[in-house]
Amino acid sequence: MIKTRDVVILGRPIHLQERSKTQMKGVTIGDSLSYKFYDGEFHGMPLLFAEPKGKVAAPRSLSVTASNLTSLFQLPTIFMLPACPAYERQRLIDKDVYFVVSDKFAHLPMLLANERIRRTKLAKALTPVAQYLLLYHLQIESIEGLAARDIENKIPYSYASITLGITCLEDLGLCRKVANGSKRKTIHFGKVGKELWEQAQPFLDSPVEERIYCDELLSEDHFTTCGINALAHYTWLNPDSERTIMMTAKQLRDFKASGLLIRPNEFDGGIIIEAWKYPPVTSIGTKAEWVDRLSLAISLREDADPRVEGEVERLITETEWKG
Image (cartoon, rainbow, N blue to C red; front, top):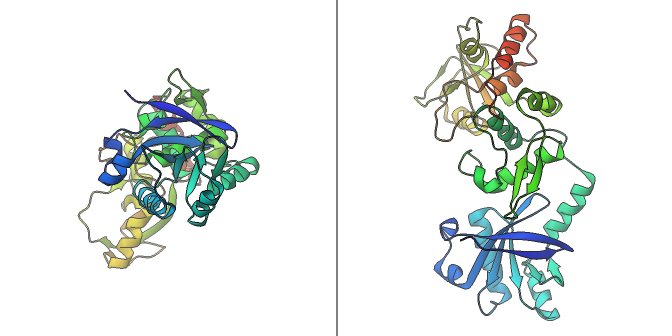
């Protein structure tokens, strides 16, 4: 049974959920015997809490442990201490160790900075992970009523990224986080299907980061088809003669550096490569032959060809909405 508890940070109660042993894979035996570990969230920022089971280690040891945990899980690590005299608190601060002492003291500079930022700056457009979450919900499987942990094994993003993506969706009014009976925060969308898609229009961002041409790509890797040829697959439009594929921006940089692109340029070639800001929206583990309908529509909405515009409308109209 998963254990939960609360901790007060900056005057606000934060709900914590204890991590299982499987979630702590990679942690040293010493740390696993010395601490209980919890997940928590403050203003959309996921945090890892470590509670000593016995005697509190020296500040230097805590600093090393925090560094190892933060590197392993890519989450800020905060120690929950039962007591801490003033001189010891100063030693922890000097070592840049984050900690809370009951509801009396806290050294959490990244949370204070985050608090100031969120009071003045909310999201104005969907981040790549937020857009992925939305398009996954609309096309692949509804995430209505799920928490970030429930989504972790469904899409190719970490728990921390998913949490921030949900916060972005909430900032833009596309969803809200609701506390359920178990105190978890789950996602609730106010609109469904095409109504939600239309509500999101002002915030959608083209997934295409860069577009280049080349004569040949010396790789046997699988690449997902995008652009006009993907549109031709979904609609009545005729395909182009060029091969049109997508890859991540990192993949494109690696191919450029390795010389596997033959005559890369910005104007013409037998292959058109689009570097995308997020991977194909599909069920986890599935190799997509074609980019998803809605991402494709977003990527082509600036195309001035009236034939393309008409077929993009058909693409959206024929979408089978899941969420």
